[in-house]
Image 1 (cartoon, rainbow, N blue to C red):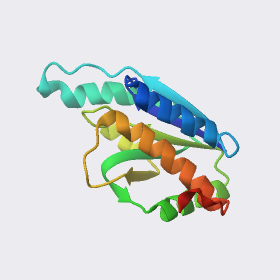
Image 2 (image 1 turned 120 degrees about the vertical axis):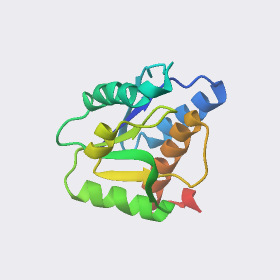
Image 3 (image 1 turned 30 degrees about the vertical axis):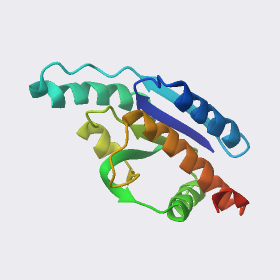
Image 4 (image 1 turned 45 degrees about the horizontal axis):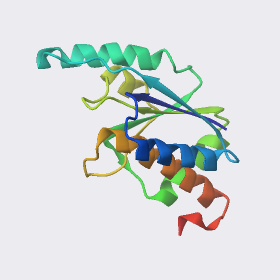
Length: 156
């Protein structure tokens, strides 16, 4: 399976980069994972937030094929346990999807254009995380999902 993570912004902290790189390496036997980083647009006027999110959304949508299964990371998305998330990935794979795309918006949110394109909306928690942590947490959970699917011991 191919997995693409589309994210706005670059990871700046070395400890986060190191963690992400470690889980990307661990994922190699299970899936080909690509990260597409897009430059967020700076919002100088809060009245323009929706317009700017839509501009970012158009960039995001340009990286998504019609056949891709898209999971957006959203505050109001569905929360899943690690086992439920693993089952979701299993179901997506069994449906013949060749590429799974996760979308992480900017710290200001996600365009409604992208949200409408989503096949599934996922929330990691009711808690608020630093925006850059989301990528590390998501990649770790993808790795955990594959370990669960393969009945391997990491997840316990």
